[in-house]
Length: 257
Image (cartoon, rainbow, N blue to C red; front, side):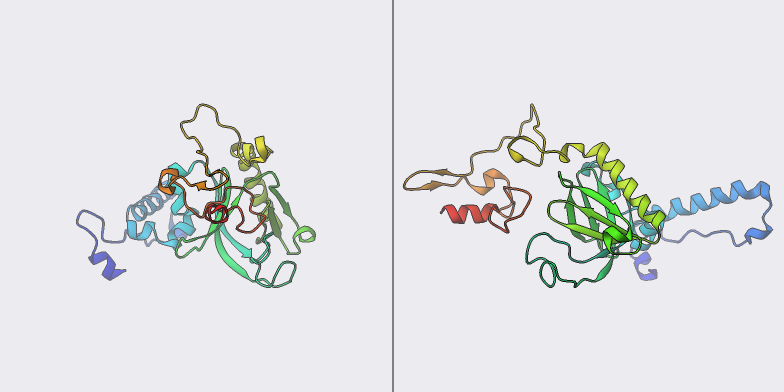
């Protein structure tokens, strides 16, 4: 950190702020408010230094992540460190030892609750490991009987059963209540069945229109250019994903061709 501080651009703070060295036991009660203000100023100065603001230890202490400051991602619910169990995918082949086999490991991850999905990422690098979408089968269970884990929390949707391990029953209840209330408030449109079996509600008066992907005749198939569609060729045109890659866009085009 000393080397990195020396390379910081001019105008940015270089030195770590300092805290008072006086013992708390010797501080009079009338000075408590000033001590709180000193601590507040200390944390504010830390957060003004990008090197320390983006450090995973700092964000863990304050209870935020890199995604907390991206307003374009929509409303954000609770977030924090959890222990995540591997496996639980409903798609054959994605579990480590096959579906239904008892083979898993525990990993520390940072869980973030959003309006239409949950995601967890690696605490040290911030790399997103998995996204769990809110859909019509979304539900939350707690308790050892339901999750086979002491202080366990189970989050289900159409594609996965995610098992989390909490520090206590009260901690599991805090996660369950926080997730459920936030999703019911901001993601209720994704919890029910919609037209044509879609996961999303009908949006009126929007500028976006879905073009016809394939126009099949007896002799040929017409493919609009992918750059016109502005889509990734790996996007799934039918969700949830329950048939492998069958409904992935590039697989559809290959099959039609």
